[in-house]
Image 1 (spheres, rainbow, N blue to C red):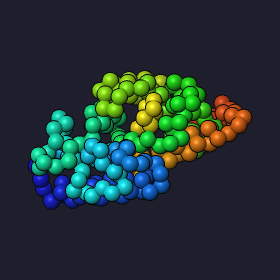
Image 2 (spheres, rainbow, N blue to C red):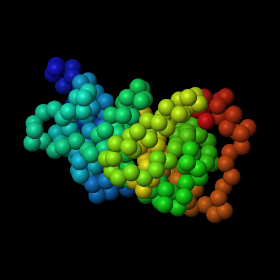
Image 3 (tube, helix red, strand yellow):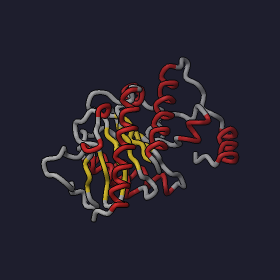
Length: 228
């Protein structure tokens, strides 16, 4: 049901999605029509339309879907991203998440092609900010874009991390790129940036750097509450 407060929330969310999308496009985190962004809001989820270029989005182009996944508004409006099901499953599995970002970031896709560090941790903890701001990131085996089985795998990874006392903020889809989620769009974007930068550092380093030691990681847990 539309109210002035709900309309204002939706307008603010639409503007924020477009701001983040434009920033990611201009800095090369997304290209062409790759990638998608959503935000949870009153009455459902706002998400970028399928096959849209994130660099040139307009607020009115974003699709609003209700809690069942049905698209609201003009039937002739652009359709929600084909990865809507994955976004909705992440929100259901991560109650604090308010924004999900998926990109085809170059170094993270390259990492899946070259070989990740391990299936449970695609990158080793080589910098303190990776440990503090990103944490564990599992690899999700390849599924075609929009395949609901990818959502099953991401939710399974979220649940497995929770059982170990960890909060996942990202998962890396093989050959497709990262899905990152957080409490705000700005926080999700910052997590994506740190994740992509760490992949770039790892791929360009020869020989490969050693991970931080257990003592160094424990110090980050004590000083900053890092979840590793």
